Length: 163
Image (cartoon, rainbow, N blue to C red; front, side, top):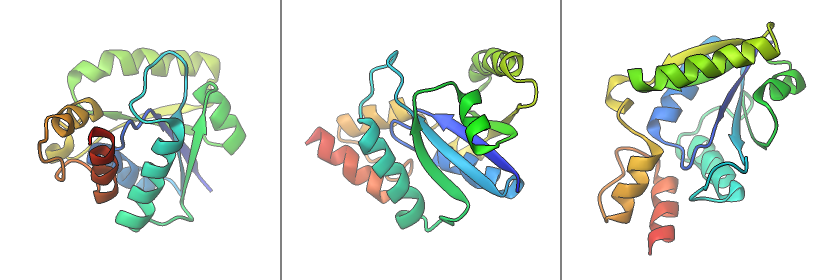
């Protein structure tokens, strides 16, 4: 069974992230969707809220296969997650060329830490490439319509935060 790890903050998860998840499932048998709780970033949603949003978005709103996706939180190196789940690949999503330099450096560091783990870059479909969690939060905060960018459950959670 081929397993990959898709790490990210998912603060909150968007249709861009979900596109990458769906594409990953075409390549791998199992996907570990791992949301981080590292201390070097301020999060809008707590780790518990992000886990809840990811689970509800993937399994209730979109009815994706629970057998093939495991949602976890982590605070370790991604390479350690790969070891733990016997994953041979890390999935990283790219939206724009500006993402590539950072992602390229990160992939290089991960390769130095464990040469047996490959990083795969996947792009979401064109209509989802512009979506970022940051923009979604800003639009929601200003009362805009975010239903094209996130699942129903995420819309609900964002509205609850801003009300």
